[in-house]
Amino acid sequence: MATNLAHVAKDRGIKYFLVSFVDLFGGTRAKLVPARAIGNMQKEGAGFAGFAAWLDMTPADPDMFAIPDPDSLTQLPWKPEVAWVAADLWMDGREVEASPRIVLKRQLAQAARKGYRMKTGVECEYFLITPDGTALSDPADTQPKPCYDQQALMRRFPVISEICDAMIELGWGPYQNDHEDANGQFEMNWDYDDALATADRHVFFKYMTKSIAEHHGMRATFMPKPFANLTGNGCHAHVSLWDAAGKKNLFLSKSDDLGLSKLAYNFLGGVMHSAQDLCAIFNPTINSYKRINAPVTTSGATWSPNAVTYSGNNRTHMIRVPDDGRFEFRLMDGAVNPYLGQAAIVAAGLDGIKNKRDPGEPVHINMYTEGHKVKAAKRLPATLLDALRLLEKSKVLRAAMSDEVIDSFIKLKMQEWNDYTSHLSDWERVNTLDI
Image 1: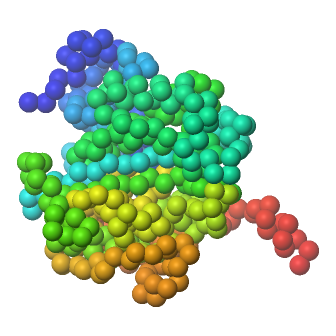
Image 2: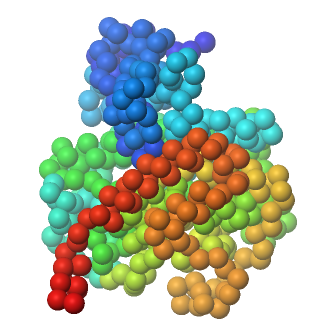
Image 3: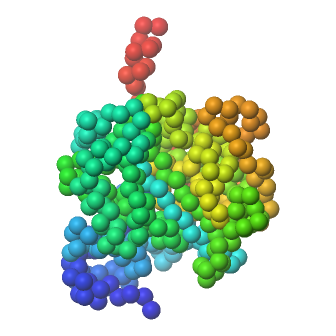
């Protein structure tokens, strides 16, 4: 029986609910619902005009209703009278096909029908910058190799500790916080879980981090490449498949050199087979391609992949195997839609299992200095336009996620690309004004 949100509100002193959904661009939308009305909202949903968000709808479409999922209920640690709850989108009595959370739930249902349960963890990197977005919030954070800088980390202790304490209170199991490879950049890690729970927490983590940063007079950004000379924001995903009960890791093999089972290699083969097509989803903004195709940064490395390869515990590859029974997918960046990103991994992985796709042999070299030696490795697209054209032709992702989802995403992203190309930049003026 579903949790009664009205009863929860009374028991926990919740006065308001943020009934929230994520659109195709990864933007978080919500209505603030008083507790007195949440009972009806749980049954009927909160009404929205779909055209007002990035969902490929028109002003003529009927109301869209966001029905809250009580399993996602998260009371705001810094404002406990408010609770956030993820919602699924419905219209005319049917689920909205291109609703990202629905897309993920359908992919997980596909996996469940085959006896699989995907568990994931994400590593969300972000910068703490000034409110106007033009500079780092900490002018003293200037080391050429700032990763793990203790002084810079502790200067931001009030923000980092508040976010970590909140995750502890929420029961997420945070286990480490660090200053990342760029000046002003941080990462916080918490326990892996079922993919839907991880995706919901990913959405909330971004909201929480931005909110707490604002309280401290700063701005948190997950933008893939906010500063040209610094390492960009990745969002690495750790992935494993388990049995239906969630007790046995089906990716684990103690007899394999990398600790992976045949099933894991087929899943991995599926992801690698579709990697170029997945870029538009994993790297969904124009700015994304300034991260994965970046020149060397001030720290000496971008830490971003540049080709479709995998290895053992080697961070220069698109996929690394850091431990037995799981792999780390390093392509996704901070702009990835938390639901579509996970859904695409499931879709590609299941295709790999179905078609017994072979990822080939692992490559044990430094891809940043010796990548040219791997002649057969597919290269990642150079721009969002290239990525969208590859996604448009993907039979695997169309079959798994539906034409409607892919076409809607491409249509809206092409509008964004066209808007970008019509913009006249300072670079163009400087370099071509006198030609």
